[in-house]
Length: 74
Image (cartoon, rainbow, N blue to C red; front, side):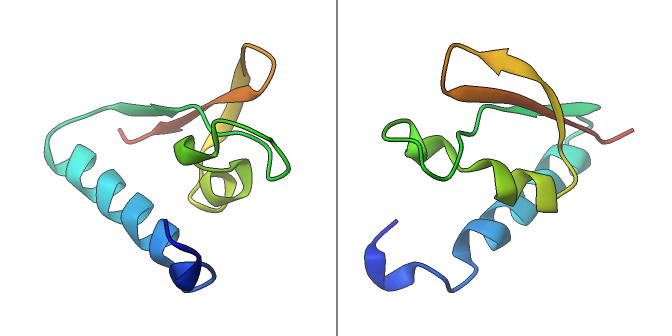
């Protein structure tokens, strides 16, 4: 995301749309691999607070930087 779009809620809107799409397609669970806000890499996968705000729960770690987060849709 470009710097001019930061802080305008684009990530939250995209995440909300992805959840709605998955639910409409019959998905039962979504899994994501975001990183901490201060992570030096993998930021393109999103940051943990956005996923927490959307209702995802921590389910473990994938490597040293990525968190495994899940959202039940059922």
